[in-house]
Image 1: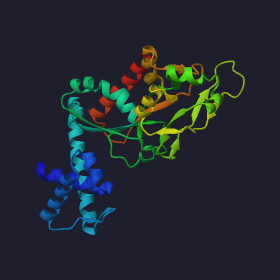
Image 2 (image 1 turned 45 degrees about the horizontal axis):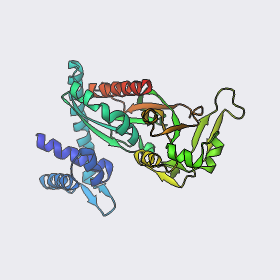
Image 3 (image 1 turned 90 degrees about the vertical axis):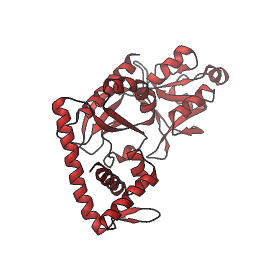
Image 4 (image 1 turned 120 degrees about the vertical axis):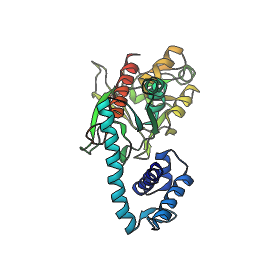
Length: 306
């Protein structure tokens, strides 16, 4: 029975994703293993469930019928497990969490031993990416995003707010000088972070300090020669002295204390960016989701207080 459930889950993931590779990543298996599971299911049923092309996987007519029933069975089993765990207040089972890359690597990963040691029956799969436009199609149990998506069906909890500040290596500032206002960044090398949805760097936003003449919000267009889709790469380039980086304050503060980076425009900070945990509606909410969201909120509070 357990073996058949594994085949059903593999088939469902492939059908939902339309891809063996995406299903394999979600399941934590190799593409070959998932393909073999689906092929075995088709052999057992003596039916072709999927049409395979080089670009896409789609359901056959028989596959659509089987998929609809498989979804009902798997969802009912998951709900039964969740209800049992909820009554026992046990944090157990497998949880898939999808987070922005830098939140996962810099904020969450260093604190994960605490969560997993507290809940030895919990298994966690972290998916780190920036697919902010694909919230509604994600099959993750918990998603972390800046701002709320348009899909109002999702449940959510506000985790906290973060601000972005500027920094550069002392050697760069000694060589190029220190800008006094955001507009002066145009004369400097800046390291931009890639907006994956727009295909360009994020613009830099600054709230004017109290008493500063001019507009309350200044936006500097992203036009740096270096654009990264990975915050670690951007930070390393700044540490190497290439230019000015724009990053979360909790990431940069320890580097200021070490003298490896220096604040730039310290009175000018970004507006607060609200961070939310999102999850798909379910009754009851599994204890593992509640525990993980609480863990995230505590991590944000700790980072803000550091």
